[in-house]
Length: 198
Image (tube, rainbow, N blue to C red; front, side, top):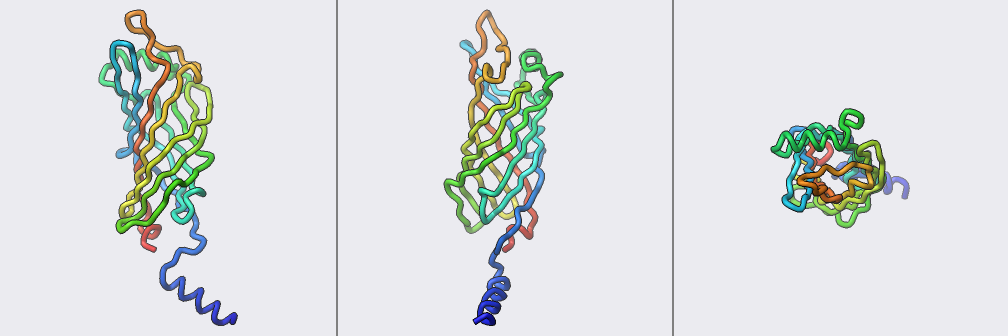
């Protein structure tokens, strides 16, 4: 019986079945990842975009709940297409004192995760701590994840209140911008070929 179990184990390994695979860690591709915020004012709305996204992904393909994410974005890297507005926002968030937005995951709940012809796809709920303007608060982000070949992509969106992070809201024509800021990000990374070949 023991010999049969050993042969079965060897057969599974030879067939490329992933047994107790270790998570892999890769850096996000800062040239292809993007984070945007959407601001609102009674007279108009605008979008600020950063293409300077840094961070790491620790990914467990067999059990994504064991994965982890860290993302850091310099607040000075956001560009709304209006230098005066960007300057006012940097002043409001005190970018000289608090230069980065930081997200660190604490939990990942897997809503769906399945293998596809080209890789994997699924929906996760990522919980973690968001640090902004010297304040840290928990956030929960629904995330759509796709892996095609060795390319990882995760897209998520959520909202925060500036008042919660103690940010003074800038004014235009005596009206303050809305307290709510909407955030949307797409984060990409290249996985080792060995991680997805099995």
